Length: 557
Picture 1: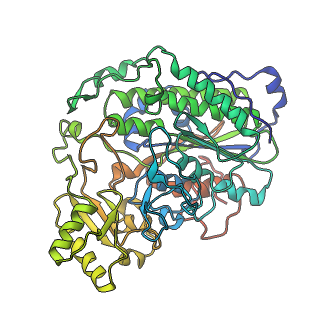
Picture 2 (picture 1 turned 135 degrees about the vertical axis):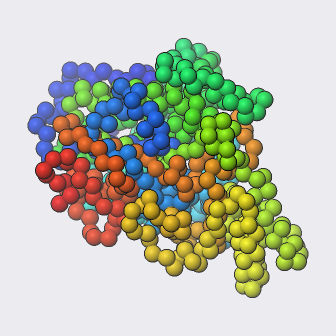
Picture 3 (picture 1 turned 180 degrees about the vertical axis):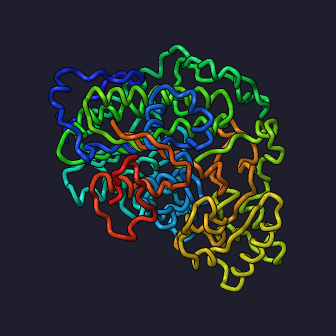
């Protein structure tokens, strides 16, 4: 593989030289695109797409002129980054893929930290995601080995071994879950620069990219301009005395690296890196089809830091639209025959302090005592159990709860029953499902918007990894007990504000149409497989092929 020679400008996209254009084929487009670009915009809900669609003038407007499915669904209950990305290019639900959450508990793992990060390989001794810090980003080894099914790029190599399967993202879990276990090239952000899991000739070029990016972030630059349509949102929301959410952000100060991720510049850098991968590796210029997976992460960081309903998100989406437009313009200059699909790993929920001012009086933060430690203590008291060891383990107030393996069978059953009883009676808990009951259920079928809560939970349940029982919070309950700087709002619920995401397909010359009925992100991989001529055995996908032709032809043959 050639050494990539990256440009030193990360925000302005490259202009392709006449020489580079001459190298590219200019044949008429065939039925099969030479380059498939799968883009996931982290936390880009259908609600945001609908709210801001009329303001788009760049890349998102272009995509909205193709095949538009505004009611796409991440059908499962665990609407988090890792499970969501695992659906997009595998075509299967998280429970089948084995990616049940961002983190889960494995009480049998041979290390003190029992929390498993979805994109780590905990089999490697001396490593742990639990040691993560802002400076080091942990000492874990990033890996997709928890992903139990192949991605589309991995499947494509069985048909065309020369095809390239590449990925770049702001998050390792996004790149790995879309690229799979054996990508040809992969990058993600780590602390102060992008990194790769590959060794050898890639490292000098990547070091140069990171050095230039660090130098750019060290210098003050002009703030990001506020579009006129965002002005009306520029008003403070009282969250805490030192954290005025809802007022203009995105200054570019000296030494701006600490705020880089939660700004539109983050996605601009990711797209610049993607552009150079396409250029220098000549993706889409050969007889076979290449796949490039792109995870744009800034929208998620902005949503967590500022919520989804304020001026910060408005500016971010305007810049996302502009940066995507520049990215597509660069591809057009390269004369590539490319097909794009854009979707999201999950939606998002605004901060409750703003929601209560905007017609959602029941919006609230989660009870600080709703956690495994406090619930476990109450269970022990109710059952007259002694000892210092916890009886319950969980990574968050909602989701998977695990009963201690140190208990005998009878005591474990009593602890589980009492915990389910107590949690089911909590005023902020919508439902608690026994893992044994979920394991006995088939994967849900039928219209995804009509799935019961149990069916949604089953879609992200894996019997070897999921909890002894699963807790779902009520609608509009934010599972953050106390707002902190950089973390005031989140996602992860089974409610549609977290499940619904847009799914947009675009290719030059395709007929525009809009299909408002529900589809799923697990439909993306079988759809792309049909377009690129990849025959996948029946039953390998949970999703179905979508006819995106828009005319009398049908790509789902």
